[in-house]
Amino acid sequence: MFQNSRENKTSLSDLGEFGLIDHLTKNFKITHESTIKGIGDDAAVLDFKGKQTVVTTDLLVEGVHFDLAYMPLKHLGYKSVMVNLSDVYAMNATPKQITVSIAVSNRFPLEALEELYAGIQLAAELYKVDVVGGDTTSSASGLLISITALGAASEEDVVYRSGAKPNDLLVVTGDLGAAYMGLQVLEREKEVFKVNPNSQPDLEPYSYLVERQLKPEARKDIPDLFKALELKPTSMIDISDGLSSEIIHLCKSAKTGVNLFEEKIPLDPAVISVCEEFEIDSTTIALSGGEDYELLFTIDQRDYDKIKANPNFTVIGHMAEENEGMHLVTRANQKIPLIARGWNSIGKEEE
Ligand code: ADP
Ligand code: MG
Image (cartoon, rainbow, N blue to C red; front, side, top):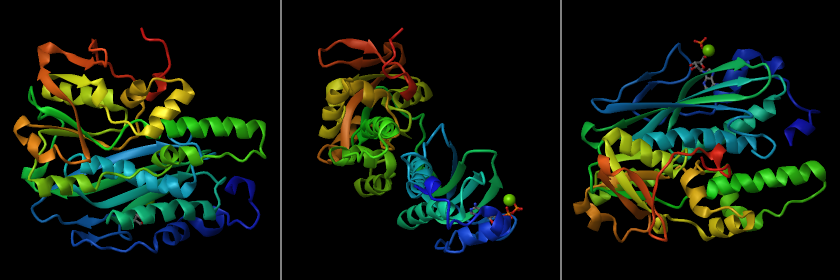
């Protein structure tokens, strides 16, 4: 990895700030009509021509949100963009532009930032967003990346967190828990590597999990699918922190309760088997794992026919009156209160 091969690397101080910005951004092309001016002035100029604009930003900090011991920089660049685009799709909007700000220590040679930007560029190309600006500064030790995404949507298409009504169906895309278990597998390999640096990890049985952790894809297809199905969700949110906390966000914003059915939660077989191996409960992982970047939304019951045959969607429960509370209905048909537990509390004793 790059930290171990400093020879033949270009020090950032050789380039200077402006040389660095120019070097990193020279390949970005402008593709959207709404981008009037991208990189190169004091500010970008955008024109969404009567559409509403959604803006979202995320800050990723080395040692808190990512570990470069197992996160290749190209993947990190790609993932940093995905995290933001996922929020734009969760508004039922189309991302158009991003800005990328980085703080780096002199521990990183130019080649490391080129890798990071290769991932950013790949994501920008595949998801059709223009990189229109950013900021570049130094940091005392680690790497920080802040990305802001802008998207456009017609006023009538924007979906908020707050629109759910009692009896609306609660629906999720894809499957849950894989990214968190991918992280557990990578953490385990990191510990093995510390003890025996010559060990070659066999990640093949875990490839789906590791890919969900290192190369997540935002659900670009879902807003398009909603249009094709002539379906507008009543509320929506993306799953970054874990299913239970996102459901609670929807309920609190809409002042509703919920019944979530454990047996309906979509799990990939790879998640079920790795949970057995790690001796953790797969429902706990789906509820609290996070980083799935799937979409969670509610629909009116009358729209059920539009989604029922579609393999992208799983109905996992329904909204309820606020005074009925928020519950998980277990496989044993027990009703237990749904609680928001972040990824960092998994495995700890329940209060
Ligand atoms: P200012 O002094 O106004 O902050 P900069 O010299 O930092 O301007 O930036 C010059 C141009 O390069 C601006 O358009 C800015 O948005 C863009 N830019 C700076 N850093 C980055 C980066 N890391 N990635 C993409 N664009 C950047
Ligand atoms: Mg600047």
